[in-house]
Amino acid sequence: MTQEEKRELGEKLGLKALAFLEGTETGTPDPDAAILWYEKAMKLGYVDVLNELGAAYLVKEDYEQAYYWFLEAALGGDKNCLYNMGNLYYNGQYVDQDKAKAYRFFREAYQRGVWEACFYMGYYAECGLFEDQDYEKAVKYYSEGVSHGCGPSALNLGRMYSMGRCVPMDMEKGHQYALMAYEDDVPEACFNLALDYENGYGTEQDMEKAIAFYREGAEKGDETCRKALERLNAEGLADGQ
Image (cartoon, rainbow, N blue to C red; front, side):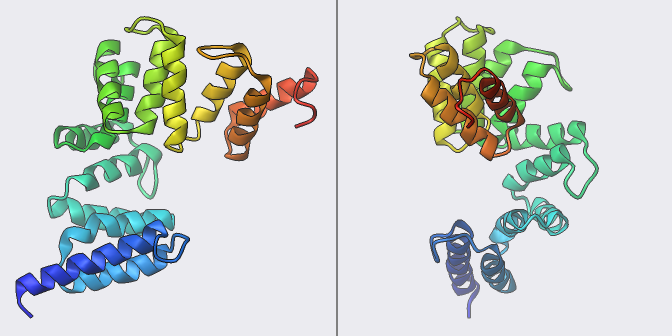
């Protein structure tokens, strides 16, 4: 088998692995099956799947193996692994939590065109962590992330508009960005939307929708939503929900 044939086969195996990882092959995600197919691609010398192999281990919450493969990908020049390494250091998964080191990975990922890193670059600029606090720069990063469909960036950009932080205060726009984040499955968006509907921020007041979003957020583990439900229950507004 020629090198070109190996590469073509490796690419096909990688796509099959991705189908298992995303659940399109069987209807539910199967990271174990994905790992097997990624490893078959690796045996052919198709190293383009290194980062994806690490991502499959992330789904399994095997952070040690994820770290190993992301590191291998980094040595192979894969730019996406930089973002994933940043996440491991940011969250302290397998490695000691180190937000300064995470920042360096996110910054390099952003500089190399990994748009997912826009959210963290915006966050660091907004909070003044490891660079000067700069709301204007934060809005720039968040807006760039939104332009590429990044839900977390949309959530934070919406918050900036709701607060009028370096942009004209626009509660309606803040609400729309929160909806965008929710549609991208950002769990924290439930609280923002619930708060909007409870108080009529940027939309019509609707306690039924507010309670539904608080409940959904609580079911997803959001502590602020859980406490909000407790408050509404105590006020007799959530009907014991």
